[in-house]
Amino acid sequence: MNSELTSDTRKTRTNRVSKEQILDAALALVLDGGVSAVSLRKIAARIDCAAPTIYYYFRGKQDILEELWSRQIDQVLEHSAGYQSLEESLYHYGHYWMVHRSLFQLMFLNNGVQVEELDGYIKLSRRIEMRFQQKGIGVEDSIRRCRMVLSAIHGLVLSSVHQHMDSPEAEIVLKQTIHLMAA
Image (cartoon, rainbow, N blue to C red):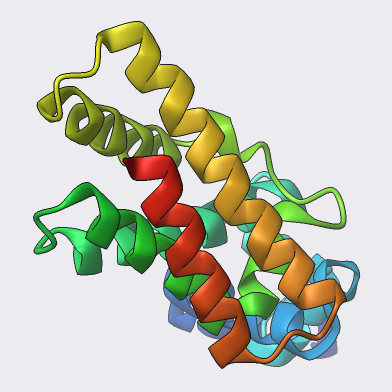
C-alpha cells in the first residue's frame, strides 16, 4: 500500500511539473554553482519531482543547457530588435553578456553547449551579417566579419570575467572595439 501511495504521489507531482519549472530550476543551479552544479537529481529536488520526470521534456543535462542558451539568446534578439544600426545591435549583444556574466560562463565555458549550432545563435549571426551587407559589404566578407566581431565580443566578456574588470571599464572597451570592427 505504501508503494501505491508513493506511485500516486509521484503521478500528482509529475502532473504539476512543467518545462519552464525545470529550466528555471536549472538556471538557478547554474547561477548558484556553475554548470557543474546542474544535475537532473538536483533539478528534481528543487522542483519536488522524481528525476525521471525530467526525461519527459529533456533527453538529459545537455538538452537543458541548450534550452537555457536558446532562452537567453532569444531574449537578446528580442531586446535588440529595435536597434537600427549595426553598432547598436552589437553593443546590445555585448552589453547583455557583460551584465549577465554568469550566464555567459554557462554558455561559453565549462564545456557548455555548441552555441554556433543553435537556432538563436544562427538567427543572431544572420541578423548581423545582413546589417554588414546593408553597409555594402559582400556576403562572404559579411559572414567573416560577423564571426570576427562576435568572437571579439566574446573575448572581451571572457576577459572581463577573468580579470574582474569593472563594468564601466569593460563597457568602454566594448564600445571602442565595436566601433572599430563595425566600421
